[in-house]
Image (cartoon, rainbow, N blue to C red; front, side):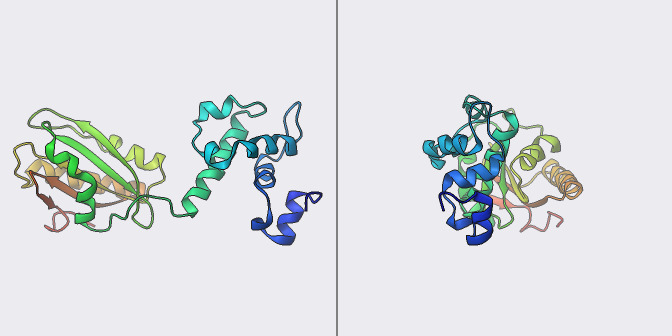
Length: 214
């Protein structure tokens, strides 16, 4: 198999039969000025896939023989592999599971708005603080909420904010914001699964209250 071209080997034996360097060579498609594609792929494989997966885009560009196009292709291939292995975070399928990921908001002294970005199986891809307000209010724009969702390829999201007073009863402004986010999500093809309002040791789900339009 060492003398067989990676593409031929893949066609004959399947992708699982290929070594790491052969798979990398297929992604690269061409070599660099001083290296053939096989030599470049071997150098990258020698670094180890786990280490490569942790590289930032800037670190990829520091490797000899890689430009932006090749680096982007390899990053994308590694990310696809990571997603296919189901290495996303824990499931967030109920308000209770969402609350587990959002309990840090209960102790926040200022009103803080946070979003959980989920994949198609409603597993956590990313959690991000969208905005931090004053002691009484926070301003949130749909653009700030949905931009990270598009970046990480989320299929849906759960949003939450705290009430520093400790009372999680949704305000009129909370309901209006939820409606705006639902509308924005529909335009983008992203579902707002829930909006939690978090108090001291407790929370309220706007979906459970029937205040979140599907």
